Image (tube, rainbow, N blue to C red; front, side, top):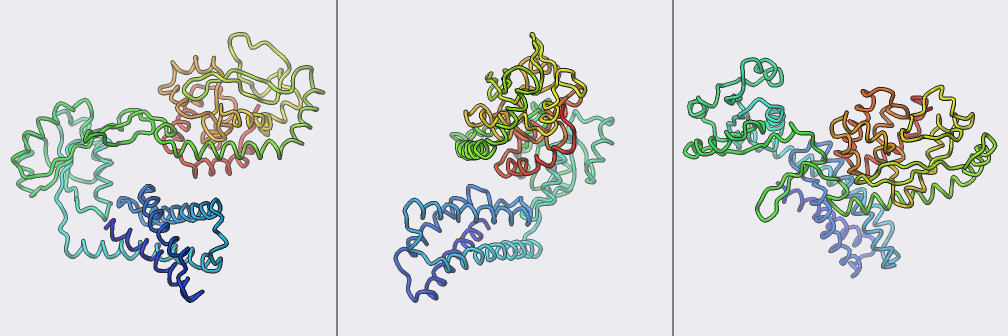
Length: 457
């Protein structure tokens, strides 16, 4: 089905390009034929890399992937035309008609092929009777995913308990799945024969991993497919992934999204530097006004610099507009509170509106921060919370940001309780696990709105 979709979409894009060109200028000039070759190569590369035709995706997710991938192709072609100075060789009318029509055709292809696939499997493809061994979270997640995926033939008909599953845990586990518990591993051979099982997924927690080899050996003569689903989700993962090197499957349990691949890092850095430069130019008049007000409010410098912990635990100086009277932090940095006597009048205003954070565009420009990421904390705060919150220091696996997912969800400013800091860290880790340029843009758009949700002191 993958190749059918690829050929249908690329073929439609190529044929429509050639047809519209011929109808417009009654011929097929060399530049259009060359463009056709570029279209085929770039669409195959981008669509494959973006996982557009991943069969586990719903229709709406697939439609979104098609739209994003097609948009990336258009941007690439415009960029190539710009650097080669060949954009004037093509008819704008042809391109403006061709681009939306091809997108529409691709969406129609997706709907049609999905429908034909469902019809074929309903009429001709027999489901594969499947068992899942285990009652862990990964087991129930696997059952739900297999039985809800129309692209797969696997149909889980029941659960088999491991030796470690107790009667005390059974009610809780049953609430997670409506499938029956057909027995335990001791009766597995009889269950396979009774239900004509053809495929078995072993989804046991790491504490029961020693059973896996025994199950593998025991099932060799049963003529069933045996698939191991390691329960890595029981661990506190960070941007996990699975890949293969020299035939050996590798599971990344802890990996920064920006070190896993250079392309995302380049794109994020490019957006950071561009926006920071434009922001500093556009905000220069505001910076001047705030600087004057700060100097008039109390003696001291305009900017406040403090050591913060950044990417990979490196210490850097963060820039902020000074919002407090000069004071000595000593060895422990005290968080600002609502009625903090150290805060000046102008300081209260710029903290509430987060204007005091704007000089961090300088940090973005010098590479120590990003526009979006976990907020950098003072070194003393890191030392305090690292022993009290699990995976706290994992926040440093990506560059800190001026704003972040935790901030737009309401966890900005003072974190006077351990619970609030734990929630902030949860959102920070969720951001790292789900990072994308689209998520960064979404957070940047929502940040101005979030400023009015809670006062900052």
